[in-house]
Structure formats: C-alpha cells, structure tokens
Image 1 (tube, rainbow, N blue to C red):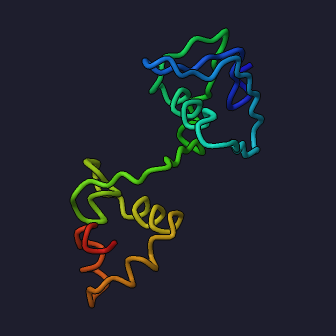
Image 2 (cartoon, rainbow, N blue to C red; image 1 turned 120 degrees about the vertical axis):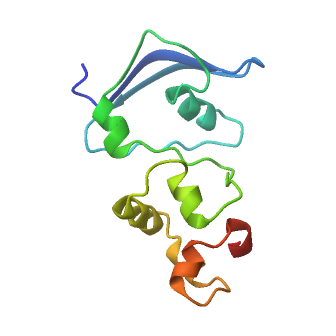
Length: 135
C-alpha cells in the first residue's frame, strides 16, 4: 500500500563483512517521525543506510513513496563529512546555487551561529570562507 510513505516487510540489510540487521518490518504512516535508538553497534546506521541503498538488501517488500524522499526523508550520519571548500560549496556541492535552499540548510542545521562566530569580519566573507578555517 504505497499510500503509506514507508513500508518495509521482513527485510535484511547486510554488509559484505557479514554484519546484518535481520527481520525488519516498519510501517511509517504519513505525518509521523520515526526515530531509531539503541546501543552502539546495534545496527541503526546499517538499517538507515540500507534504506538508502548503501547495503545489500533482501526483503519481502520495501516501498518508499517518491515524494517521501523529496519531502521529508533524512539521514544524519554519526561522523561529519566535509570536503575542503567553503561553507557554500559544502552545502551546494556541484548543484546550481539556489538561495532559498541554501538559506534553509543554514537554518535547519543551525549553522548560522557558527558562521557568525568565525574570525571573519563581514557576513558574506564568512559564507565563502574555507570550512577548516571555521571549525
């Protein structure tokens, strides 16, 4: 039933080294937030990366509505990954610059205080400064 944003039935998400998360069933209803909690090494990241297609997957059924991915599906990794470049380059990557998207990313990631606290005097310089210089 793809009226539900997320449906997973009897799935296994596995890495090449053999670690796997088995027998996962999730029914995500519209408008809900699903959080994963558990001890270190219990498979939270494996499960989420599996949904994103980063692991080997076997399942009776996995259904993710396309608009779910575009409107409200997110994965925040435990480890920060930044490429050497400016704040703007790390947010935009290789995409066309979209000012509204850029400002929204700054807002939802709460980066503005970090950027404003940087050692650069003018705001526009801060957004174009190299990430390693800010943190």
